[in-house]
Length: 558
Image (cartoon, rainbow, N blue to C red; front, side):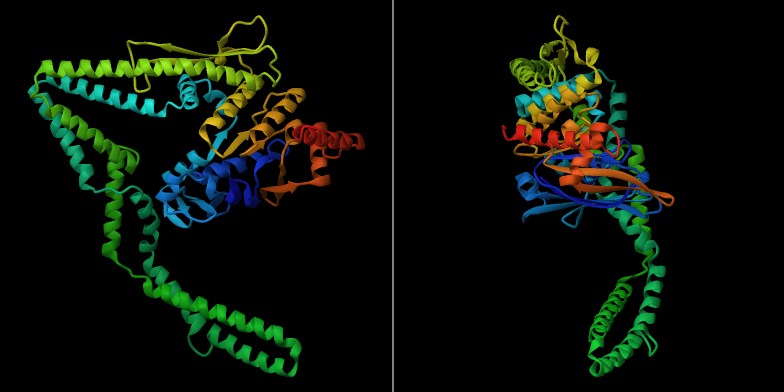
């Protein structure tokens, strides 16, 4: 569960600090107020990409910190990062130049580690996902997730790789000796370049963070020294002057006790100034202008940049490419084997892959009917009394790939007499929202993710159906945490907690503010959403109160 979210200088957010509890948490506000930015801030804290334009205008850097309860963190991640205690803090920064840093419990980590937490802790569903769900590959992933086929998918992927290696070895026989030697020389040279660099994951980020300090060591040392001199050296230093003032005020306090608090404050201030002076002195002493070390770091950064430009965009990808090169070299070096042996190996690998693909097809076909039935059960109450939903699984034995030989299609018919057709062909925006909500409800029970985020999942939905969507959201939040950005009062009224998001112009800047709502303030916000205006009539407020009472009664079975 997400316990709290703190945001500083991100987009049009100046500073926010929000605390959350379990159940359904709704965010409302007028269009363009910045509701989605808060959900994007959570995504940024969990490793999602962001550019330098994410930093608020005039600020040096943006920072987001998310605190999750430890009981929602998988055991493997706790062990990997040596985590203990009731919660875990994840923090992400990005400066105005687009340089990003990530932290877990204050320790610097690669951004990929935050992505691991994001995949395990939070499931995001935004408006753009309406289009994502139309992709056959995504529908296949959803079916496999529902059926729990991760192990089978992994085994099939390994079988596919084995077939590809066998085919590569066989194809190498048809090359000329000259061509094989040319490729071997190329692959060995590329591999030696990457291996010779002795790359470490995250090393490029570390260099980028360290270089400014090394480049500016002399200036930093001079400024720290001057600061220390002003604070702590000579009779006219800040510390000496503050000390004399403190002693005089203490004498005054002996004569007039009303100045005792002033004397204590001066003593505390003097102690802080002395601490600052010592810290600056230690900082100056620790700095060392080392041109040779700076040259080595810049050369290292340049080497890594050249490798990225030549072979892959990141260090992890470079290391993966090195593994691919080893496989290619092994395949080319195996040309001493007889062609018959290689052909037999290819055929054996192909039959093994096809056998696994057939087994996976049978498992998918069995799960497809169950998934369709579960989704139907979830979406029928959402304004689809005559809806039909089916999951089609078709196998092409001639072309099995890394995910098998199946193509999956979600078929949909919202109205009586209308034949089942692919979801992408007939579903409207409002219908897509409800189908997606049904799918997320079903899959959430499978994957165990404790926090779900829905960004305007009710887009294109009317008031009556909106009430049904709200009931479904509330049911989905039992035993987990659900965040919902909504424009519908019928959805917001089911929230266990309610936040109002507004946008204000201050001088030349536009800033977002978020307020938790309760009691009268919540009634007024629900009334605004119902009536579309800020100043609601008595009748509007009464309607809002009745809606909140009805939703509370529906939740408790009243």
